[in-house]
Image (cartoon, rainbow, N blue to C red; front, side, top):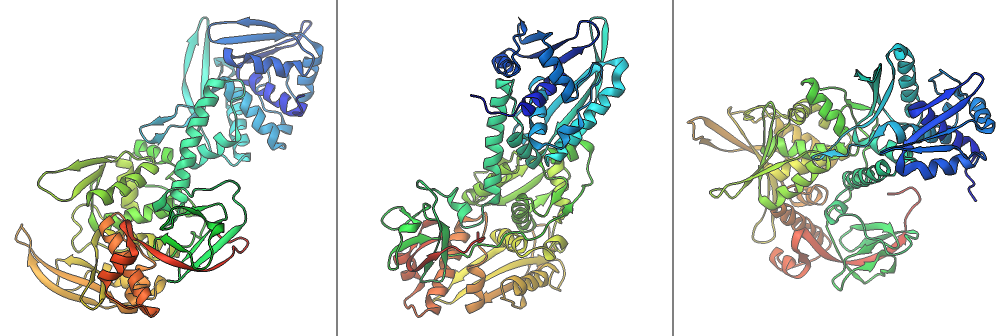
Length: 565
């Protein structure tokens, strides 16, 4: 038996009536509703809730049902429908369930889910139309829909469409667009296309892809290097596993984690067991809300492109912000920005991760490989993305002597600073281990002047604040470029305990070689600080695995505190 409340069914029928229906009054009142052929069965099932058996006329694509039944007409009148009134009744705005169902009916007959254009999610579109002499009422309906969407937490915009002619009538049209990754996620997860199975299936596929992108953006290292956490059966209670090197594995009991003998459930681990992990601390969540960037200086098309990606306006709480901080850091170090293209240079395997991040944002990067070079080039040909990175602090053109840490990074939450440093050191950083196990980690920058570039003291201040590893800026040497210009090279270097704190908090992103060596070196320093002996080469040989992972021993297992992530 269908237990759905009659009010929600009425709201859904009202949506169809507003989109593709007609209500006639006078001496012979009747109602006509039109839905796609595939949705006819669901519509008839809803009408049977009122004891109605309408006449049915099936066309090539659309089915029209018509009824003069007083029970249905009376229910619609009580719900607020009346001939010639194209407005959403006030009670629908006060009931979230009714709001969702009215939109379900309306979008079933007037909505479209276009899917993706490359990686960019195209806006979900609602096209409203009425006779040209009733254009004013159409605007009121569009604004009602906008208000209803906003009540569900979905941002949208109303756009004017050119009129069309059909037979002897001329129709005015108006569109309502839901665009941007996060608004599309909210809309598609809250509004179904009940009477339109084809659009419902397209919506399901788009929602699934957007949800996967959101999960990838939300993942923090080291989990993001492993992909989604694998669960076995019921997640169960939360567990925290502490290791001998001072790292933690936290998650539900059913989460499977790698060990030298194969995967095991996190909740089955005991002190003395060995696990395989990335030796880096999990960064904190972004603890700031509000608008980070409201607009960019670019053409209307470029700004519309960014809105479709959900990157304009850009808010601090958006999970894309940490990824953008990483990308900006790498671009500052080893990127090149022009008016309508952004180029990145680096090792082939490492830039695969950059391409993945760019694709998750909805961009379409292009890879260029050259036989005479060890490095590859990854380019994004997009005026909108170039404008976004320019506003986020990446200098355009030649960077020598002009590189600075963007203000939003310097003043940003700790997570943003860590992500920026991970990208920057992935591009320009280095780590070395000398005989005796002396580890050094640093970054170098060239300047056309004999004074150090501003970026190095700024990096030093950030290291002191978020890692507690301040150092000094040193001038290394000078050299002459291929164009005959003199450059001075400056470096910032960390050693000993400072290097350990850095390497166990900041990985080298977008460079697999640097990331692996940096993680191993950080774990080695942590091992030495806890009384371990032997050389770095022996430590790597006995305890390290490809990609930067190490084998560590479980020393404690406890319950995960409530509210902890």
